[in-house]
Image (cartoon, rainbow, N blue to C red; front, side, top):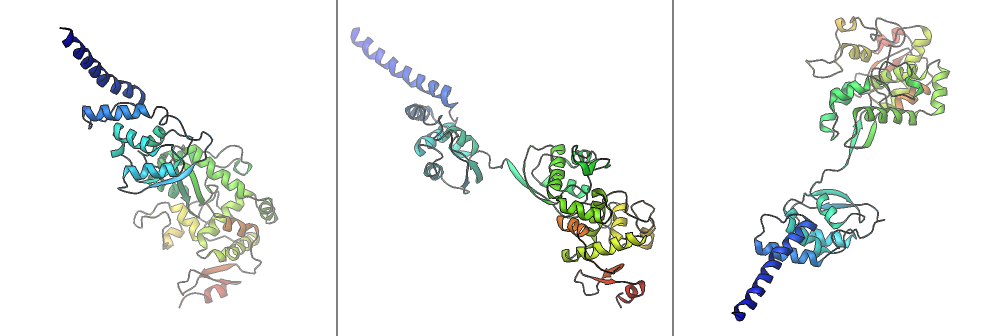
Length: 364
């Protein structure tokens, strides 16, 4: 009888260890992949426990972030080895075993990551499951109106809807003197490329764009606006017109000079983009900037229509670039009161001092 008890106890001990070790590993490292057999679960559990602490501790808590790229179809062993070579993990084999044990080896995504040795190997394994960057690059193009910025949001990577952005833009950010009394943020959503967190809200985006405008509004530019009798708001309104009129950026100071000369002489600005802004979205052309305009369009009754109403429109018609703003602050000194597109398709304009000269510049 005693001869049977000893082997039985030994078998029970082995069975207990066989059952207990996977349970301990599961408490420390999470559940094993259901794709593993019971024998494999035991094998990987033993090896994980052997690496006690290596997987859950960072290699350098003060380590700096660095870029790391995973190629499509790259073997797990290769990824782990490169992570160790980069100093992001302490032991490539330990990470490989954890990835296989947990099943995360099957779901690593190819792409670009920003990783740090201040993360544990387990944290890095989790990070490799999502190649979506925490930040995105968002671009506002010169001359865009608020609606065009909003329309670009669904494909931007930001979790902001067009409607949410437009609602936020209706309330100009506080603390910016040039926006006091402004009806909306139009004109001050500075064209630029931005690196932004994906989780940014609509209000935060509007504030970010407006603050970037403030950063580019130099004292010299303010003085330049004032020399022409313009407030910042009026100058931005004029710059938004210059932006839409100038196809070639080098012509912005010339076009600004024409409009400033007209304002000083009490002439109407007679700018097509102001009419385009007033008309709004053109369903036929699927654009916010209808072109060409008809005679009926030029008669469209709106305070933005500078063919009908003298002076500046009540607000900016888009968001001007730094170049357009500088053109208004520091325009060319010219005698011109008229300009029209050249006939060569270059996008450049022919300028004239008199209406007769303007007519002579017409295409044959």
